[in-house]
Length: 135
Image (cartoon, rainbow, N blue to C red; front, side):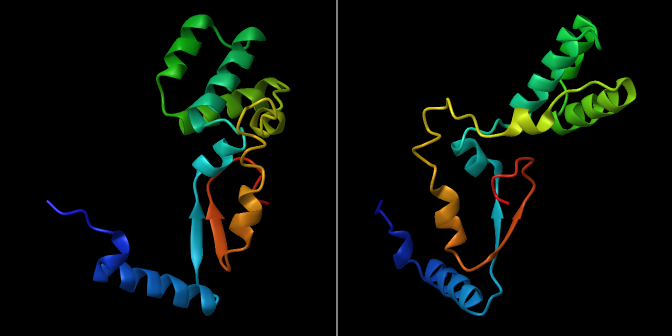
């Protein structure tokens, strides 16, 4: 079995040329996933959903048994349910504060320039991230 260097494979060379051409012609679109935000200390979808559940539980807006049921669900669905409860009960969960980069995270300063590097790529950026770090 031989080790292949990605750059030696013709398919990868063609893909790299296409990406370079798209960047040069202002047609490159880059999807930025949550992993980049997590490098800066932002929580994952699951962690954010769990923070919201905990907040609702502590403030007696949901029961312990309901919180355990919610935790089993999809994080995006959990966030939608929690947001609906928030609006209905006028709960003051500070979603913005919960998703800001955690400056106590050991990697926060290690990756502080990640967005500067990303912005140097001549592209349009798309994300489904809930934080404002890419703004």
